[in-house]
Image (cartoon, rainbow, N blue to C red):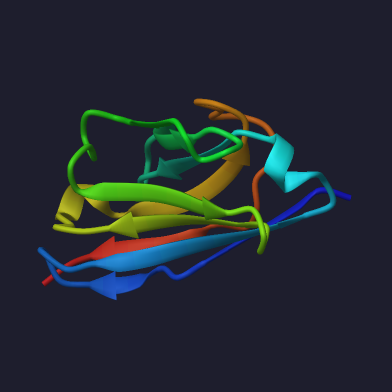
Length: 117
């Protein structure tokens, strides 16, 4: 059974940082591109970032480029997202998904990021 478990969210002040993690199991993590998506209150799912199976290629939405960094550990079957210079528009539930620029499909329970002073 495919499982994705996100963690690392929390309440942070504007300008702050967080590191999100996604632990994957039930499939061959190292063979799959992975993505992060988010859903703000009252809005639809938004693609945030993707990383290729080897980690050699990455992509970011314009809204987060230069502030967020995606990475992965194929040894630990874990996907990461480093969030920096957070602002209130980054407040959302963050999910990891399987695939390149994949918005739908399997995702975990998510981890909540709230940016507020």
